[in-house]
Image (cartoon, rainbow, N blue to C red; front, top):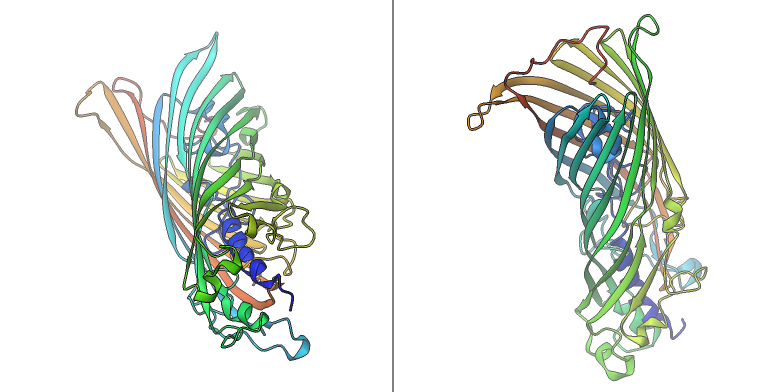
Length: 505
């Protein structure tokens, strides 16, 4: 085995750890805009429809996340608070993981199946939309605020799992603060906004000091006999923007039996995060702390560049007879921005061994993601004026090209979506403090299930660990929201929908 094994072993661990700050997805099987670790669960109305029509919907303030132009169809002042709980399952089944340095006689890597790496997580989102100008002559102008969680993951394997040298803990948290504006003139609404995203990551994996010592013929060392750990904590703030448009191509009465029809398009820019953080090591054998190793396993800082993808939404909604809405959506995500993640440690001795994939010219991790699409459809049914029922389904493509580059930090795969939801106008009341204001109150609840195609992983790192296995994976998502619409106490109350209704106009 080459003498470069040790620094490669260490730095691949650090590199994978840093990279996973970018590669997170609630156990790698998260409901998302288009696979991997991006999230679309900000809106219960969208979750209940499997995200069908999300860029054309104009039902509530949560539409700001998918298309800021949706505010052009929201009257007055409205707020929404949503809560989502994600319960993923990603049970690993070992299929011959072993050391790869001894050919056909390679010994097996000892360890368990990880205890189910995926962990449940919850998050909340907040939205506000306010009409500041509404004039037949000058059009309608709205301002909005959105506080959302667009990316995230928690994956936590047992310390003794067979893939511990690839990953132990992977945790990504993001909070996006967005400010948006929209302008509507007759049947066209356009909108745009800016985002400030804060992201933090905690990542760790084991270091096979036993293998490193065995490679250097240090007495008492054997593969898997002396495990240490490396842990990274890092954070960054970066910025992006979004824009969109909604066109009402059909009005009630133009075609008998059909109500309002809308096309929606939106774009959310990519965001580049430059993580900086501290690398810390535990259980490092004394021999590896000597000056001969140049401080490779001493605490240091490191940085990594993560390019989050841009997303394109194409949606439509068509009302039928005032009581049924047909919805569709195609989402295209430019995951190829994340082809690799450059990594730079502060220790120059360590930096020379960072390349964990020969295809890379610079130190880093190769993800080789490709662009991905999601195609979904849904139906809304309004049996009475205050009740909306929803069902949806579709297919979501993973950006991971194959099992040979799939990471145990994100054992992502193609998935099928099935969902259902309900919305109900609970009551209206006069504000007890400002009695001139009347508040309408809606509640929403949705459920989404994702079926994954049992993603398989077959990968070899540059330190001599061959990880092989399959994940039994699925995800359950529950989402709920409370919506308040504020208006004058003297204004007319909500009217029942009929065939002449313009569908949330």
